[in-house]
View: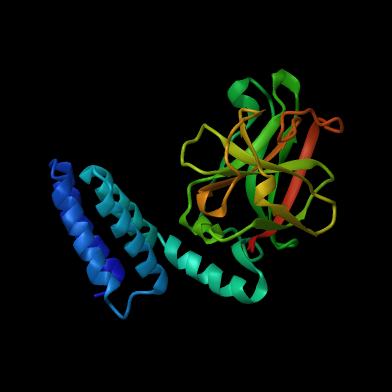
Length: 276
């Protein structure tokens, strides 16, 4: 039986037990399934490692409830493709030093979804047009108009939570192929699925010609609503669950961009890669 089929069957049994208040029964079901999969020759190295770590942690914690959730999150990381993405990335990176996370050269991928988040939420008047595909450039384009009118001054896109970002687990940085308008932009990374909350930001200038930019994860700055958040640990690849783009009158550390101007903006992306 395939690993994913076994995990789905275990969840079909364990989830109702958990919902009925039997966290211990749910945990036993999940651990037994994980141990069976670990012994199978057909299981991948990544699947075995994830399940072994989950079993070890789940059986050490005092709470059966917490143990059940540790196992369930491990199961989900296999079912949503995150573990497979990590394995593919590790295989490619071992020979090239980089690996593809998202490519826009042949169109917009179906996942992740990207959502607009502009300053209109606070009374501003900036407007993003979302991501559009430019076939001539073979790139996705983030465009619109940004203005400080109405007290605002930012336009942005944010991805939904996506399992494919798990490929960044071993990355030390993010490599972009971009073409812009000379404006300063931010690449944003979130480590949780909450829409609001802390996000890590990195300022970069997108030249008006196609350019490769390397953004080290250690240089991303933790911010909340435009202000630096003290005492936060450095960003790590395995934490990234969402990515976003922003054009703003503010820098990642809360300073004002002296060269900021009201008007249209356009930023092209051909691909996003991880670097190790």
